[in-house]
Image: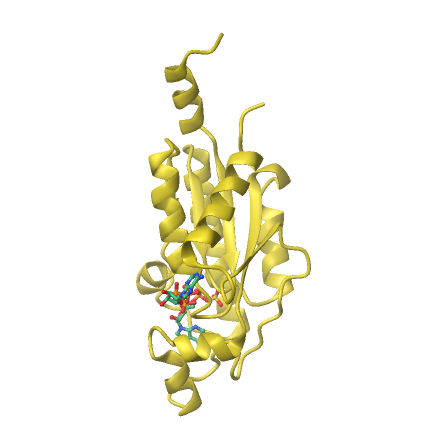
Length: 188
Ligand SMILES: Nc1ncnc2c1ncn2[C@@H]1O[C@H](COP(=O)(O)OS(=O)(=O)O)[C@@H](OP(=O)(O)O)[C@H]1O
Ligand SMILES: Nc1ncnc2c1ncn2[C@@H]1O[C@H](COP(=O)(O)OP(=O)(O)O)[C@@H](O)[C@H]1O
C-alpha cells in the first residue's frame, strides 16, 4: 500500500504544460495565478511564466507583428520546456493568437504533457474590462497591431479545455482547470 507521504511526493513530480490562449483582458493572467496557488496548496511544483516579464527581458527585442509574436512564443516554449524538464507544471498565459502559432508550440511538446486552454471572452467584454487601458490606446491609434482591433485573433479549433470567463466566475474557471489537471496528470 502507498503511504500518504509517498502520494504527496509523487504529486510533486507530476509535470505538464498548460498553455493559455485568449484575447487581452480575457482572464489568462488572473486564472493562471489563481490556479498556481491552488496547485501549490495541493503539492504540485508549478510556476506561471509571466509574459510581461519575458517581454521586458528575454524578448525585449520583439514587438507585435506576427513574425515577432511567433519568435516570442518560440522562445517562451523553450523556457517552458526547461521548467518541464526539472519537474514543474508550467502555466503559460500568452495571447498566442493564431492556429499556426499554437500548432508550432504544440509540436514542441509530447501530447500527454501538453494542454491548450482557451480563455474565451468576447471582444466587447474584454474591451469593457480593459484592465491595463490598452484597448483605449489601441482605439485611439496610440498602440498598433493590437490583438482583436488591428491584429487578428483566431479562436482555437480544438483546445483541450474552454474556460468561459464571460459567464463563469474566476473561482469557477480556476476550479474547472484544477480538476482537469488533476485528472490528466494524475498518476495511474
Ligand atoms: N499590440 C499588442 N497586442 C496585444 N497585446 C499587447 C500589444 N501591445 C502590448 N500588449 C501587451 O502584451 C501582452 C501580450 O503579449 P503576449 O506575449 O501574450 O502576446 S503574443 O502571444 O506574442 O501574441 C498583453 O498582455 P495580456 O493583456 O495579459 O494578454 C498586453 O498587455
Ligand atoms: N471569470 C473571470 N476570469 C478571469 N478574469 C475575470 C473574470 N471575470 C472578470 N475578470 C476580470 O477580467 C480581467 C482579466 O485581466 P487579465 O487576467 O489581466 O487578462 P489577460 O491576462 O487575459 O490579459 C481582470 O480584471 C479580472 O478580474
